[in-house]
Image (cartoon, rainbow, N blue to C red):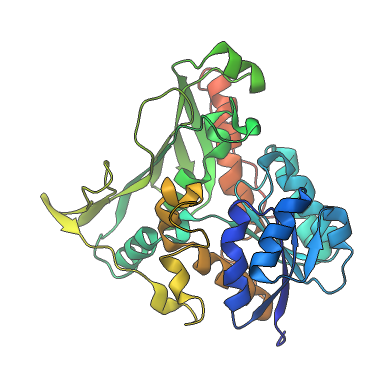
Length: 367
């Protein structure tokens, strides 16, 4: 494929962050946006000069001028919207998680194979500057053999849209799961998870999940490395943090535990402060500036910036990987099998927690 990829974005909350990225990308053209509320749709489309405007997702999928759809709709809609787009012949990028059930994960994997289109889960952490830096440390031998991995994501979700209320912590675990599995270079094989603490009865009633915190141990396929994951969403006092720690033979990387204190590299037994570089130079110059800024102004920033520091500059890296996978006719880095595995870790972990910590096998999506 040599022509530019004609993109559409569905969901214009977080999705608005990607509007100028696709507009500026040398291999993409943003031709349409979709939002259920017409006033919000027109406000964004007018601001950025987007020609195609849809309040109906199904109608947008009938547009023959659209090659690919980037889905940023609410979590419960991810699977249905993904499958519908694939069956309509569109390539799909979808924000996390891939789905909410194992059956939905299987259905998406099947839809990708049946359609012959590309699918990418847009997991931010594995394109953050911290991850890219640590990946370099692994690949250049600075850390030596990886011995153990730990991921954590703690965030108070009070005040977010209603579908978040009472969500099982591990059902939104990919920000903690993805960096450890990616750095290990392996898929998850099984998980054991314990639920801890209790949230209010009002929150529990939403999904039937009582736990304030869920913590899991993951075994990896064909790997001697183990991994630990911790996740909380409600009624647990903690500054926001998405983090991972890598214990290596020669050196270990530890994510800062309080914002502003800095990351640490333990070389042997000596801790050293780590300066994390930006990786904008790996991007086309047209979209490189988006590693450090978003589309909102200082008085109206999206929560991904106010709470998540812009997801570590990941947004243009993800968009670039998705577009180039289509141009080059290859699987994206976070393809359907990888996405299903990472998402299933959380689904199976919650199942384990609800059953007192029994071991649950992760489905094999490779065949």
